[in-house]
Length: 176
Image (tube, rainbow, N blue to C red):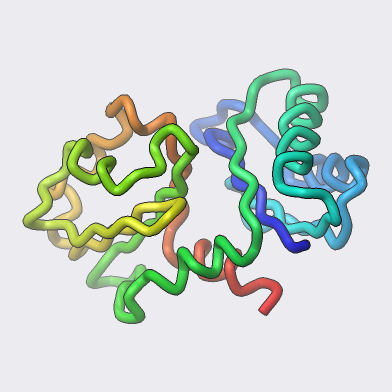
């Protein structure tokens, strides 16, 4: 089975440094196959015959042992990643005119209700829920006015890990 591990809160502002080479070696040492990492924000693509729960336990324990601190991690099947990306409207991009992000949700926040709780200006942000994620799109000229930055201080922020739409599409399509 093909999986993607999404690590939350690493290599941000010089904190919780995790080298991608060490991360790849760790995943290989855990018995995973065809391991690769993508950019420096903690995206690991790999294969395993184990069920998702077993993979998660191996990854969570391995990260703590190798790096010495807790790293929140989501483990998703490649098929789950593809369903999320398929829910992104084709026209939603990251370019000079717009910004699109995918917030992958941890189990405690995985609900359509999360949208109503976020401190954003909904009249400026198009936002949609799909099982496992929320996806938003905003005009670049409205990014500051949209209050998207306020998500960082919100209680639900720790229950998500955010990737830009280009990364989300790459991770979902890596094995296609």
